[in-house]
Length: 260
Image 1 (tube, rainbow, N blue to C red):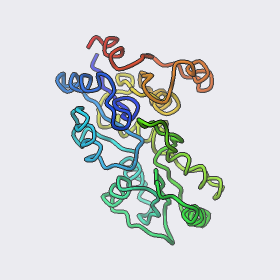
Image 2 (image 1 turned 90 degrees about the horizontal axis):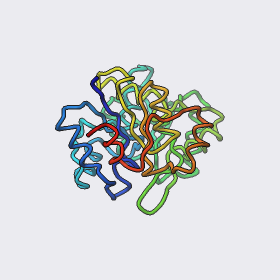
Image 3 (image 1 turned 180 degrees about the horizontal axis):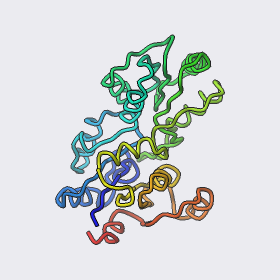
Image 4 (image 1 turned 120 degrees about the vertical axis):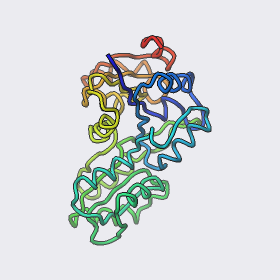
């Protein structure tokens, strides 16, 4: 049976500017074997070209066409809805570029959508503006719910932390695009062109990667190289009702499991 792979990036192939063990070997094996895969990230701050550039600098081969970001998925979601293109954007370059490429225009009043990702300049005034627009009828869309992000120096607050502040202020729950939502996973499966049951979701985060794979009907491979550690797995399995198809310390163990 032919398999495909949806592969998380930060915490799975690298951690910040640190390449994780056998990441390059794994991707090279898939490329050389002609196996379909998508490099999927909840990070909305970088363009696909920037993501691929970062991977290549770490010695992991990648092209922009291999990458699917939550920013790209958010832009496609808005485009598919066809319900307006005026957007109040809370985010960085990757999100703004994706929205512009989808034909959106940025607006601070009379917006059709408030679209929010990670924004490291986020402040109190932005919460108020987003709150007013959402309470006035703008739809609230969030690229991803990650509350913390792994880096080589520990963790930093993620887009989900910002989303919680806006949700609390506005009283409106957002549409979530990134993992564990099936929205981004569905777009990835469209690219791969195989049934979900033939596709592995590979990642480090039980609550996002593993839930996304499970909800989409994919096989799930958890690597203990990022957010999730071994001690937390029993509680997470009970909390989510999801049991992973594979759990390993690193990609080398997963490659051995696959016979690569």
